[in-house]
Length: 111
Length: 115
Image 1 (cartoon, helix red, strand yellow):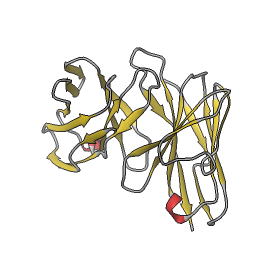
Image 2 (cartoon, rainbow over the protein chains, first blue to last red; image 1 turned 45 degrees about the vertical axis):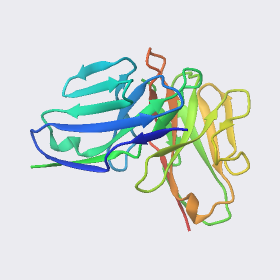
Image 3 (spheres, one colour; image 1 turned 180 degrees about the horizontal axis):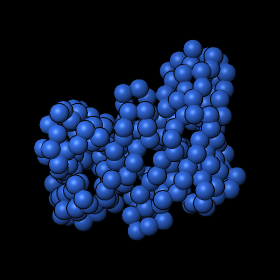
Image 4 (cartoon, rainbow over the protein chains, first blue to last red; image 1 turned 120 degrees about the vertical axis):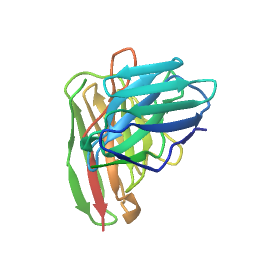
């Protein structure tokens, strides 16, 4: 089975940094994805990690440790538009490309 | 990334009826998926829509309740049958990209309310 855990809510101030942690226990592993979902909208792809280490993409970075079953998404220089739900998802197999999603972390950015 | 459209965008239906949701992609894709997102919750995979063969359903989802068609590489439908209020949810289709990461791209979703 798949078990993916992330905090329910986080609040931060505009301009600050927030780190969203994700731990997973899955029957297989073939990549970890982060998605952003604004209220009432579809999820949009943010990042992908399959090897250990940090992937940086502008203000967003994602880190993976496969041995620890752990990832984080780092949001820097927070803007009001970053208020959204952030979903951690794991692909367990390279054969079917299915994703298992965590419950999501709602980030609220305050002025 | 693929451009995905869904019809209808929302609907209010009476219990016991059925609704068919369409998903159209602007390019041919191999993998298409259907998800459900209940209010305030994350995404749950219903099934993988296979072109030319029966869909592959996840645990807890059955073909009689959620029949799926995939007649070609750009189109799929999901039917929610014999609806009850518990089926009120957002239904999203997604496709896998063709890049090295095979990330999934999501359609805008269909918001279904069953009364």
